[in-house]
Image (cartoon, rainbow, N blue to C red; front, side):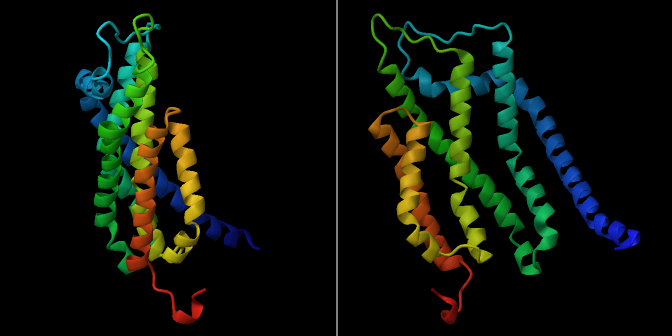
Amino acid sequence: MTEQSQIDKKQPFLSHLKELRDRLIVCFIAIAITFIFTYIFKERIFYFLMQPFLKVMPEKSSFIFTYVTEAFITYFKIALVTAIFITSPVILYEMWMFVAPGLYEKEKKFVIPFVFLGSLCFVSGAVFCYFIILPVIYKFFIGFAGNIVIPMPDLKGYMNLTLKLLIIFGFIFELPLAVFYLGKAGIINHRMLSTKRRYAILGIFILSAIITPPDISSQILIALPMWGLYELSIIITKFFGKKVPVDERV
């Protein structure tokens, strides 16, 4: 192989790296600009995120922080995560545009639905977690409190758990959208998902047991929506997936 041919092969790779860098820079700039505004309203966002716990918190309990920098770091993290939530359409758009050159023309038209539905699914998952999952989880934990044991949760621990669950459910609700595009590409189909149902259900209940308290009702409350999303994915691939010729079906 000549030196010139090696250089020619490196050019596309370097150009992809440059484009990836440019896309990431756009995402970082969007997040940074949004972060300025979310940090201004950090107390309001924090109060909003506290509501699921405040509704079940006993009268004598309160939030505490044990390190001098803990409150600042918590507010910083809240503002940053909120900025990422708000700029998720920009991030999804840049992701799509990065992979778009490798798609067919008919596939490139899905950019707007991908950005819109991707953002909608992510926000829907976070909203479901906020209004349904968090109240149940925190009510379970507060159930251990009494006249002698008074809950005094630390700021950092509460926010880390809350933000983690919000992000996890945001990604979980992306499942139908991911399945739609994988089905369109012919990578998966409804038969594949149907035959793997028992393993998927087992995995769903294991995951729900990991991310929830050791309470059966909480685990079921989380597992059922995830199961429902999996069944919805089967329906999506059946009607919108790539059609397989009859002689190629298993």
